[in-house]
Length: 180
Image (cartoon, rainbow, N blue to C red; front, top):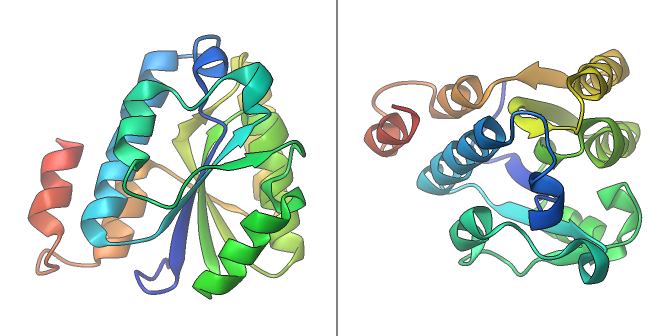
């Protein structure tokens, strides 16, 4: 189970140009917003990355506004976030072993990041309703490969309630409002 004190959320490549061509784009954005707001209410750190922002643009405005209070965005050229040394430095500095992944594309950057983190001994959980690819088939294959590699697959609501554990948690009311 995810632990509030041992978890970090990683948002991968939710850039304007990419978001526009994702399968079920609006559902993706809605679930990402819920996940980010819920994670913020609980007080879990968030890292966010952009793939080649010079060519792909910056994070979509409806997501970027939610992340503005967090550490600045990390730029990357490698598909896996682990290929960016600053990402790994941040992960190591946080000292947390449980990583929630969300973003795009499921079968490329999210998959490669999950595989690399798993190979390094991290526990990886994929927010399945907060990831996407251009084609539904690619998302399905990406999720299947991550599951086979050892990642756990969950939905945003499941992740948030797993972190809360009970209705007595100080962030319960805030998170409940987010998921309604």
